[in-house]
Amino acid sequence: MRKLTVLSVFFTIVSLAIAGSVMAQEEKPSLSPSPGVEEMVLEGTYVVTAETKSGFSSGSAEVKKTGETYHLLMTFSELELVGVCAQKDNILSVSFVNNEGMVGGLMVFEISATDQSLIGVWSQMGVEKTMSIELVRIGDPPPPFVGPPEPKKEEAPPSPPKKRVPVNIGVA
Image 1 (cartoon, rainbow, N blue to C red):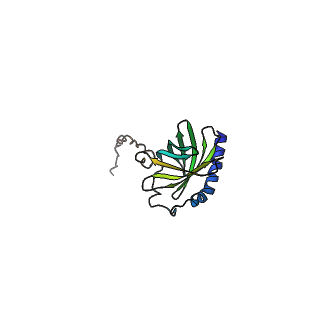
Image 2 (tube, one colour):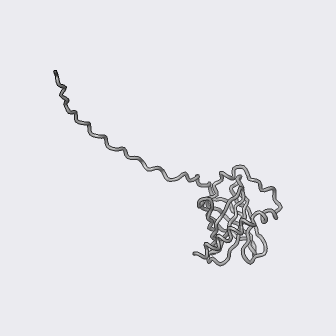
Image 3 (cartoon, rainbow, N blue to C red):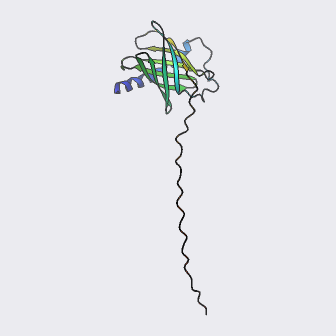
């Protein structure tokens, strides 16, 4: 488990450092923040289509918010990828390792505020090129988490009436 954590931290740093250069190599329009990206809820379930060395592969992904970051679990038949994600404007960077903790890599996505998809590139250790990857949300995004409901305050039982003590007023 410690090896998995160390690899995840390492690849997060690497992915953030090279995310700009990888996306800059793509011939795409400017990556200025898209309207509404800040409000987009990235948590949820996605269908994944990824280019591989031997063609294309389909799978699924779960994204969960963890503080200021996200965790990713991506599944392709028997292969699982576990990653940590960092968002900067409309860019989501992911460092990942496979379910054996042996092979790591990175993914860099452009977040689409219009159709809630993540479109990007990915690569892994030992591969000398980037490949395309797309995540498309399944269903509606979950509502934003607003915290647990506040517990109901129980009212204290009414106090018993005070006894009146007769007061002798001396007559002079």
